[in-house]
Image (cartoon, rainbow, N blue to C red):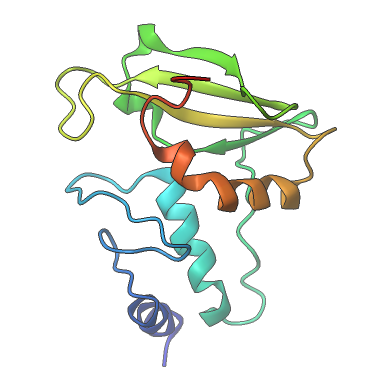
Length: 152
């Protein structure tokens, strides 16, 4: 029984696979043939932590590009967006959160022309890493959807 074997068993028990299907928490990513999105990768890593041997640690919620002031969580890979469309916007209801938004190119297979959140930036004076992850778990469906600021 190897760590990889335990991970595969845990993913099978959770109903997850290496690319498609349900993920813990109920969010279902669209079927895709390309690379897995950063938010999905994090969710799957978190789901398998209990199966790893002691000492393997805990996947941090904030990514390595975070600073002492801002904790960042990548939702989507920025390479899948039109660079000229990228912009920052304050979250419409959450103090201490800024969104990096972008528009998918018209040629995008799943969401052509859709605006989506690329990165969530949390003010560390307002959100601890644990609080930011709790917010993510409660708001994941909104954050991975399209047109996040429509009607806001």
